[in-house]
Amino acid sequence: MTPARFRLSLVACLVGILLISPGLAAPPPATAGGLGFWLEQAWLRNPQARALEARETEARAAQELAAGLTPEPGSVSVGALNDQLNSNRGKREVAVELNAYLWLPGQKAAREAEAESRVDEVGARRAALRLELAGELREAWWTVAAARNAASLAARRLETARALAGEVRRRYQAGDLSRIDANLAEMETQAAEAERIDADSTLLQAEDSFRALTGAAAPSSIGAELPATPGHGSVTEQAPTTHPQLTAAAAASRSARARVKVAEESRRAAPEVSLLALRERAEFSEAYSDSVGIRLKIPFSSGPLVRRERSAAQAEADQSDAEMQRVESRIALDAARARQALQAAERQYALAEQRHTLSADSLRLAEKSFALGEADLATLLRIRAAAYDADTFLGRQRIARAAAISRLNQTLGVLP
Image (cartoon, rainbow, N blue to C red):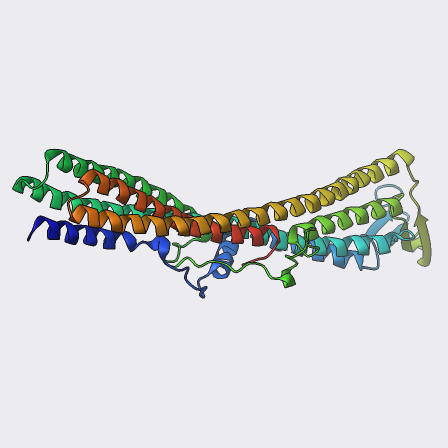
């Protein structure tokens, strides 16, 4: 084989290996193992999600209490009196007392409204927590995708470098190439191997993070999300009113306002009504007599105590209102930033495609020059490194664009 034909076949082989890059593959379509499936797996492992079940049970129990006939459970008292230790004339007395608490005017309605707002708040918190978990999953999802892309490119670079080093070593031993060319090929192999080690370590960390979040290994196919549609409220510049975080903040504010109303209607402790039944006799010769009575206990109101309870509830309500406004403003700003980031990612991806086209054309020209003896190995390695960088950049920008879409969906409150 002539040196020209050898160079042509060698470079054609190297170019073929280089251009088969995962960064150039089209994103796989969404499957049953997409983000939505893995969100369910992460939700089942989330400790806060489990705590919400108990919170909902607590809120439902408060709702049942508010719907009761009395604000607190009643009580019964039983007592007996005799003179056996004294005169022992036969005095006997047995008393039974039934106690029940009464609602204050307006208190029952306030408690019912407060209990209902607590149930709504738990539901809103569940949706907001689910969205927060989706954000963590999306970041882990695209971190794995980026790490896999980098590891695959590093492995292909190492494979290409080893093939080139082997061929250059044989040609050097045959006297066709210089020792400098052999050293350059060996240095390229060592650099590629070091990059492969770093990429594999990064990939292991990314997959471990995904496993810790979902309880299982990341799927082999990492699919991209579709941008949010107008039905999700994604076309407005304002924060969408159905955003789970905004809904949770609004529910917390309503619940705090309901507690203020309860404090206003609970100006004193609950009144107590008692029904008494008494059976007694004075001595052995007398017959038992029965009597029935009723008693009403109305606690006094304390101005400082009422102000303390109301002020505490009012402080929570004011804080909740301010938090709701802050969340609304933050969501609008985050959405605007996410849209800008997506536009920038689209432009970067277009530039990456152009750069890849130019680098591929330069690599083909370098191949011809090297085959004809017009370019040395150092020039080929330099152009090949530029082509590798272009492939790396293209794959990275494809993932960055898909991740930008996911982040936009996240800021708009759209679940996978």
